[in-house]
Image 1 (cartoon, rainbow, N blue to C red):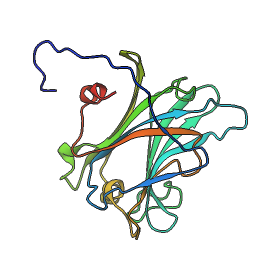
Image 2 (image 1 turned 90 degrees about the vertical axis):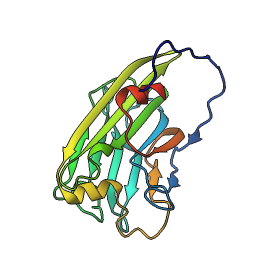
Image 3 (image 1 turned 60 degrees about the vertical axis):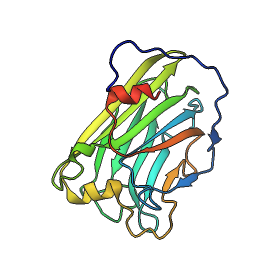
Image 4 (image 1 turned 180 degrees about the vertical axis):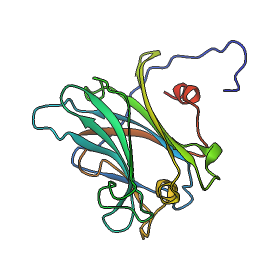
Length: 212
């Protein structure tokens, strides 16, 4: 950050409002209608894991052509530990499950607190410093858990992509004809979403923590 010297902050306590996504979805523009960002940030709270709960729940996904997916951000849990994972299609129009030829997967380190009702801040972005390079680009994923006035836990993952199809898949729209192609929940997530933001340019990990 560009902050220099001592900084002071005022602590405010207020209600936190969120959108219940249990068996529902929320759609917003991504790379459409002027929403030309490099990354997204949001807060989610997931209901606790129980026997019979789906192991994979979709937090957000970019819809491609028809029922295809360009990328999918998921909560992966097995009852013992949880992770966030991103599946990126290797097809510029998307693939049926984002696991087609040349697709890539990145997974955060495991934790046990993603599915206990806590409010997790998530930030998914491409590295804007290399965004103009058609050969190489990096994708970064951060998630932080705030506990009152401190951040008690941070998990992250990153990957470098060199496929032009994968680079286009992250910020592409395929041949999706609508303008609400970024889907939160997609009827598979059991929990809530709030404070959705889109960022132009990439935030460093330290700057992201300032927004938690």
